[in-house]
Structure formats: structure tokens, C-alpha cells
Image (cartoon, rainbow, N blue to C red; front, top):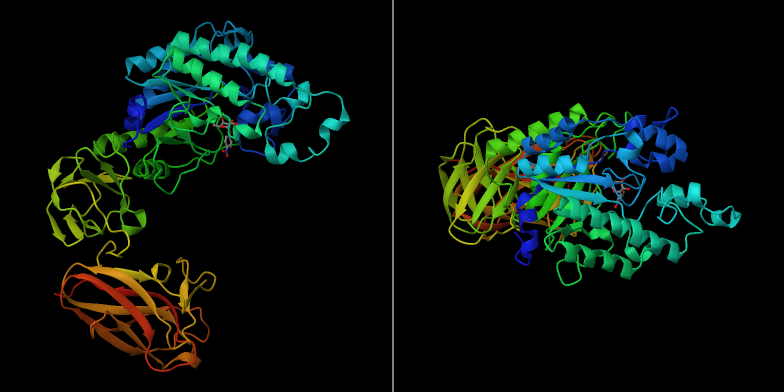
Length: 595
Ligand code: JFZ
């Protein structure tokens, strides 16, 4: 976990996985208006804005929503079953409809759909009963039903044609619409009456653990003032100092005085580095937040589990969203996916909750990603790609390992630590589908070397072109379709051309050296050399692989005898003068130690 965390966010950083629920009026329209799918976006909940749905039609659709208290309970039950620790319910989306019987607006589900119980109260109880934290999404800025709110330019703009000037494409590209006749005073009145009023009402009635606001632009680029967002935050802090607030309130400062509690990154965005304050990705089971019949591109448990682990390894959370249908039921695809996620987390027992940033780069390991329990000095290896020989090869681990455990059954695994490489012997078949977790107990705080190449699954070292240090030769794009690797090394004409890789060799002994390259007839027969320093080298002559540069073949060059385990720099260079291309080198492979 992050060390600079305030106690307020401790539960959040422990929780790691949450459920987002967008029950939206678009569900009552199946995501279409009069037969037309939502325009320009996959987001069904934008239907009213995108398709310019008249207010009366939207309100008639609201009346089609129906729900029972048991369905509300089923949301919490599904979250619990999925291993989620918090539920973010959309209490009011951009259309302005309140999903609780608000005293501050008539525009409520209870009024317009005749729902005769309080969904938020029921959900609060269902979450409390299951130890889940109830959180609210509240659209504080966009409100398409209130003339003082932002975003509705189709019902509320003036008739002045000037309103369209410069905005022909604004809606298409910017997405959030333009109000030419909304005065700051009107918006301020809305802000205090409805926006802050309803947030206060939600807090007083349901004591949410967190507010998820949704201003996805920089506050400076909106009509909200600094004072307004500060007032909102101050009010929340005053009513309940334990309530968390996300950065989409419109405040980017995090953690410190006057700042919010955590950062919400972009929708379906998964950062690729550690972030030093609490953060969360919100993702969708398919592409839309609200339910739409046109949105059937469902993501898999594989996708979510890998991204969850990745987020944890960078110190973050993941909240996954489903949009219930008109009767409140979650789409079956989302439910099945949630069960798969939950089963994986339950079976592994450890490695997710309470875990955080691991300094081990994902590129340095061939099997998956590590998370860390910083308090216990326990490193969790999340294996997405189980090695077929059952040997987990951990690279670049500098801290001594004192024990290895297969988390799903608690059994001890044998292991061998050879310098910065650890071999853990697991079963030949992957015990837990999607992700199997192995716990490594460390003698002290984790230290890693991410710079030195280690072994791949199955053994041996793969020195690929894109991992090389090279100026001459250069990294070139291979022939279309020739390989999935990003580059090849070409341009070896210069005498000082060389490509190098820093590797760690865990065991002394002979290793077979293979080069995979393309070479044409004109360039065959030239000398090259692979060296590991100190007279340790093998030489070869290039062989033709095809008349053009499209055919890569693995060609054995010889054996290299590594006198001792340790770090080596492997260099490939021309052997003897040449003014021609040598080859297009794709990779060098150093096999497993040969006895
Ligand atoms: C917003 C909403 O407009 C949307 O309906 C949904 O509620 C989602 C959670 O948030 O949409 C966004 C927000 C941010 C980006 C894009 C759409 N973004 O940062 O790219």
C-alpha cells in the first residue's frame, strides 16, 4: 500500500475491486430511440443527448423501469460473490433523474416510474448485510433536466443562431454540448440548490463511503468555479470526514489539505506505471455503462483479472460496471463473468486484497505480474501463463527467499535461488484458472533488478531485437506478417556495428546459441560473432534463408561455455570487414544449461 495514505483511504486501498452499477433510463429503451441506435458513441446512457430525445419521450421511458427489492439485493449478492468490496451506484446520471425519493426534486424514479420503495435504502441495507461499502456516483455538473445544470443544449439553448457558431462540430468531438445562455448565476443557483443539496441529502440518508463525481475534463475547461467545487468538498468533509471523494469532482490535488482522496483515471484506462497516490480505473463489462441491446462486445474474465492484478501492482483499484436491464436484472454475460472473477479470487485466497505495488516490471517476467504485501514482505506471483514444465522462473529478484507457497491450497513449494534467479517447482498443470498465485516470503524488503534479462517459461534466455541496445544496427520493422515481434536488427554494414543484451545466467555450463535471422543470397557467407566477454565467443557464417528479407530461420551457431553464474553482456557483431548487410536479426537464444 502507499505509505503517504491517509487513514481515510485505508479500506479503499485494501479493497482493490469494486462494482459499478449504471441503471439508466436507456435500459427501458433497450439503448435505442425509435429504432435508432445511440449516435456517435457506445455509451447508451448518452442516448437522450446524442439522439436528441425529447423530454416527454424520455419521461415516458422512465415509467417503463420496474424493479423489486429482491433484485436490488441480487446486485449486492453478485458483488459479494465476485469478490468485490464496494458498490458504486449511480444515484443520478447526466439526465438528472434521482434514483432515490429526493425531497429536492420531483424528477425521481419513485415519482416517474411509480417505484414504491427506496432503492438506495434497500441497497444500503443489502451492502451492510454483506460487509460491502455503498458508494454513490452523482452527476454534479451535467444535469439535462434542470435548466440551471450543464449539458442540455437541445432543450434549453436560446434561439439565437449565434449559439451554433464555432460549435458545428463541438458536440460530435467534444461530446458534452454547449449552453450559450446559461449564466454563472443560474448555474450557481443549481449548484447550491440541487447539486450540493442532493449530495447532502444522500449523505444524511445513506452515509455513503464514497462519492464518485464525474467531471472528466479539467475544471478550468468547464463552467464550474474553483469555489463551487471547494464548497462541495468542504460540505462533504463536514458532514462525514470519512467519506472519500474522487478526482472527477474537478479537483486534481490528491491527498493533501483541500485535495480529494483518489484519482479516477480515464474510462477503461489501465495505467502502465506506479502511481504514488490511491487511484482507480473504472471499466465496463462490454462497452456501454447503461444497458443497450447494441452493446454486445463483452470482455472476458481473463481481461479483468489481468487488469486487476496489473492495477494492484501499480497501486490501484478496479471498479467494473454493468448496466441493469429495464427490470433491474444484470445482463447474464456480466453475471457469469463476475462469478468467474469471484471464483478465481476465492480459490487463490491471497494476493489481491491488501496488496499493492510491486517494483518487479511485467516485462521482466514471462509468466505474469507480481503484487506485494509490503507489511509481510510477501511477494505474490500471479501466473497467467503457467509454464508447461511447472517450473516458475522468477527473474531479477535480489532479496533472499525464505519460502514459497501455492496459495490455493497452502502447500509449500520447493525452490532454488541462484543469484537473482529463483526456480519454484509447481505442479505441471495450472491449479487455478485465469491466474494462479504463488506467495514468496522474502527475508526483507523486496529489491529487484529490472534491467537484466532473465529466463523465459520453459528455460533459456530469449534475446529479442526490441530488448537490445543498438544504434548500429538499427531497429527496423520486419516484413509485414513475418513475425509478431516488434522489430528486427538491420544495417550491419559498419565495422563498429553491434547489438548487446545484459543477461543473468543462473547456472554455469554450456548453452546452445541460436540466431534467428533472414539473409538473402547476396549477403550469405559473411562472418559474425556472438560474444559474452573474456574470450567467451562463438563465430559463424551467415546462411541464405530466402531471396528476400521475409524468411527468418533459427540457425544454431554453437555452444558457449559459461564458467560461472552471473551477469554477462552478450554482443553480436560482424566478424571481419564488411560493407554489406549481414542479416536481419530477430533474436538470439541461449538454451538451458546442458548438464
Ligand atoms: C462519463 C459519463 O459521461 C459516462 O456516461 C459514464 O458515466 C462514465 C463513467 O463517465 O464518461 C466519460 C468520462 C471520462 C471519459 C470519457 C467518458 N474520459 O476520460 O475519456
